[in-house]
Structure formats: structure tokens, C-alpha cells
Length: 248
Image (cartoon, helix red, strand yellow):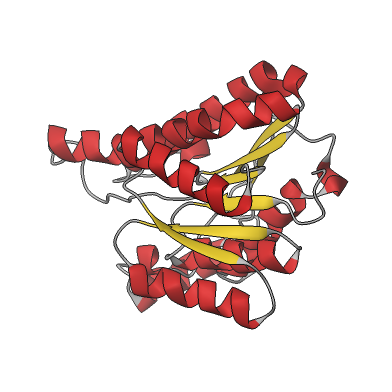
């Protein structure tokens, strides 16, 4: 990025992975917009941590499934910090259950946030990125978007769509100097995986060649690298911090 303090917007900044990403990008010198939908307290705490460390942070609320709310969020971000140069689409919902049991409304809501939300944010970020001939978009997917997960068909489908979107946009936006990549985490210790009992966590740990469960910081490090100048020739790729759980 051209600015010594590029503007980064992290959606879903109130969750475990989103918090870690926002903090890590601040450590890398970014001015960070921390987005949240419902959990204002957690997102505000992230902003407070960034500011306590001498960084700049802005708290903004939006339902990313609603394009008008996304447009308002980007307008507020630009008014405060300037154009968004690094966009991390991390906001997402999960769903666990048989495909026969998910309702059409639940299916649509999952895609509205996981896929449409990223689409709305990308569309809002692109005019300035294209004009400035630079930008970095990082979409947070999942290993289940690569290989599929039993009883997580809807979630896997939404994350697979995000991976395909990332690859297509890398080709489409490359001539404009915009890089698009994807991070597909494996099993990470977050609230989203809180439904797993200790025995299930132990089994997943045993299945992982490195013998451990990932931490949000592991995902944040992958994002920070992809957003850095060191990754200036990297686009259209899927980086999967998963401890070897899935090798593809």
C-alpha cells in the first residue's frame, strides 16, 4: 500500500478471529475499521486495545447482508480515515445439521451473510481501489469450503462460493493492481467451535499432524502476510492454516 498507515476494514471484528485480525493489522501499522453487527461490546473492546497500543481504530456497525448499510459503513470509514485499501471479509455465520433439516430461510440467511456480505463489501470498496490502482482483498473461508464437511453442507457451500469468488476476482481485478486472496482456516479455537465437546476437540487434535488446535492468531498472521508488501506478487491463492488437518 502507498500510505504508510493504510486503512484496513475488518468485518466481523467482534468475533475471535476478527479480533485477532484487527489487532494484528494495527500492529502492522494499519488504521483499522472494526466492524460488528450485534456484539458492540466485544468490538469496542478491540478498538480500545488498538488505541491503548497507540494505534488508530474506528468502530462501525452494519448488517453486511444489507447493501445500503454496507454503503453507509464505507462512507463513514472514508470520511474518518480515507479510502479502504485493505478489506478483510471475515463476517460469517455457521450452521451444523443435516441438509434435510435446514430450512430455506436458514440457507438463504447463511448465504446472505457469508457470500452476499462479502460481495456487498467488495462492491463498496472497489471504486476507490480501481481509481487508485491498488488494493488488497482477503476473504476468510474455511477448509470445509475446500473439501466439504459432513453435516455442514450449507456452510461448506457458502465458503466454497467465497473461494471461487476470490479466484475469479483475482483474474478480473489484477490489471487494476488489486490483489484478491483467501484464507481457509482449519479447526480454530473460537466460539463458533464451542459446540464441540472435549472428546470431539481431542479427536480433532489427534487427527491434526501438528497435534494441536489452531488459535485465532494463526489466522491473523496469515492475513497480515497476505496484506503486506512481501506478498505483492500473490493473488488468487488459498492459504489454509490448518496444522496439516487437510492437505490439498
